[in-house]
Amino acid sequence: MTESQIIQLVSLVGFLILVLGSLSIRNMQFSFIVKTVIGWAIIAGLITLVVINKDRILDQLQVIGASSGLSDPAPVTGAGSVSIRLSPDGHFWARATINGVERRMLIDSGATVTAISESTARAAGIDYTDGAPVQVSTANGVVNARRANVGRVAVGALSTEDLTVFVAPSFGDLDVLGMNFLSRLKSWRVEGNVLILEPNPS
Image (cartoon, rainbow, N blue to C red; front, side, top):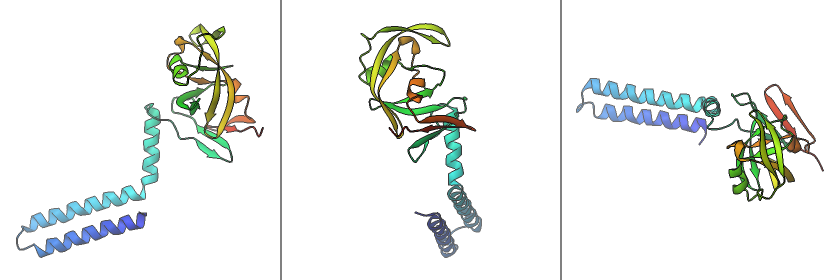
């Protein structure tokens, strides 16, 4: 239903209320009729405002959801590229899939290798327990991890296969897309508050 159709519907409802009110005016007090008409007029006005400003309202809801951690700014895709807006926390977060399992991942160019949590590794069917032990430098110091390989990692239309990842219990629930993913792209750059990921034609 288009905006004009919704507005017409609201107007029709208001008109019918007025007609019914005028027909039953003998059986109802005048003050009640006035209150009813005013109430429906307010409702019609609110519906009209919501319809007209629905795009702004949706944008504000998205900002509120992102700032509360309930959602992230929606990625914008075009011509194979992916653009990710900066989250209110000052980081770029992507909705990625690891072997088909969707995860919220921090894009960190300071991380040499992609790192995932044990829960993500298990959900994605990644065998890491026998992987080569490695030491990873994090903000909380050096942690012990295991090396493993992911069959496929995708962010929107961008994807890569056989990607090396580090898995460690100390990562908690945090999943990070590192430079070994970004380096497989044709290019990546930040313009203003937008991270733009360009696919590699090969």
